[in-house]
Length: 458
Image (cartoon, rainbow, N blue to C red; front, side, top):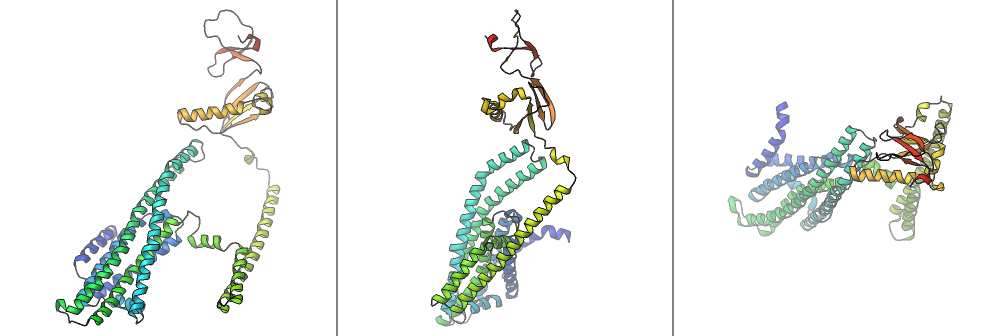
């Protein structure tokens, strides 16, 4: 049983190829046509209830297999229609039901369904898939850079970064495949139209001439018989094709949301009471003030206005409940013991300095320390490709007036002192005379240095 589960797809594909060559009994044709309709409904409903496109990442492959399945059924039914004049109860029922006893009406309905499938849904879905694939591929480098930036700043870890990169790659592969897979649906529609004309012409020729051992019938009888069978065959194939094309259109136009499509549409279309009030009032006016059917329009308008009233009342109650709940949460927070852990907000990089260095950071006093920090972060990003996290500047009265401390995630990694309006002078090795100044240590390499005044700068 386990081995069968591993090879069932291969068996399915091989059977499709065999059915092209070997005639299929009408009973098996009826069963396979039922399976075709059921699979199309399953795919459509899965598309509607999926939360994002990648939930159906195998959709391009499914589309290819379903297209091949329908073409095999069309070939087999064509063999039966032209050869025997009968292709099973499903095809005959579809043809008679749609025609309703009138050949012209049935033919017009069939042509309209084919046009809607081919010209509207299929072409629209194909264009959306093409544009989505292009924009997804164009946005891929920017998304990769955003992930790298979040990883460098510590917002996400390696596992999250790997998962997000994989999702981006899966999206680009999926929409690229959908762009090509949309051609399957288009080709399937064209093939269905051609097969329909071939069935009608071939069936009329076979019916009138009686080739293949069949009994010759009149042209009018042959036209009626084979047109009904062809319409039934075309409809039983076009209906699943229409469902699959609709599934593809929904999938490529669906935005990534946290709920399924039904809930999202309900929240976006029926969420503003004023919209329903105005729409309902308009329908009531059209029903009363115009010759349009009064009962239908007025009743529908009243129903919409009642829905708006219920929705408005529900939203007001929900708003009051949320306000009360928010106040209760605030009271609970006040009553709780103080959680000091929440007060310990640690910055990635922090520069603390005493009050004597404030003029260097205060823009109102001519300080440009913040601009210098921004330029250094930009220079490191351009030269090294490393994004330095935002550096927090903060004064600390617990430090000496001229002292500064550099911290990384709350841990001190460097410190030093700066004398305001002084310059740091270092002996390059060839100065022998003594210079008056305040002895200090250069913070980067720990070399001896002097703080000198502006008059000693030269």
